[in-house]
Image (cartoon, rainbow, N blue to C red):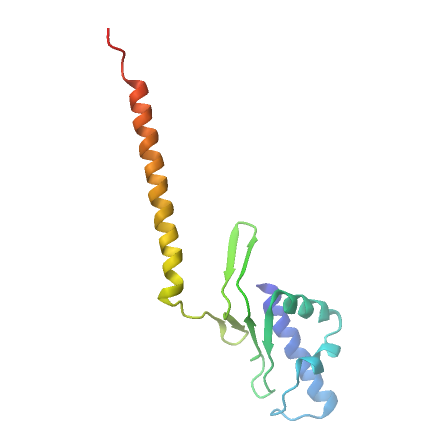
Length: 142
């Protein structure tokens, strides 16, 4: 997540340099290809983000740090103890932070159904185990 934030920051810095080098007004908008040569050592970070499926929307200079990064595919990864999930369509902007797409009930139904069936199976397993244990603990008739 820090890399995503940093990538937007470096793009904004490159955008400022692009405007100064090319005498552009605040209404001009560069392309990502215009900015890549100006990123220097941070070019690899942007390339890594693009390889993950991040799509950048570069904005004009009028609103600083308003560029938007959008996840084009679901991303699931673990960092330390935290499991981080990003659904396709989730966007991040330095000025507005995270925006998550609304979950449609149709997309939620399979996940809820799977979770409920998992809980039911676990309960059945525990009940059977308790019954089996009870049977083995009965004292023998004399």
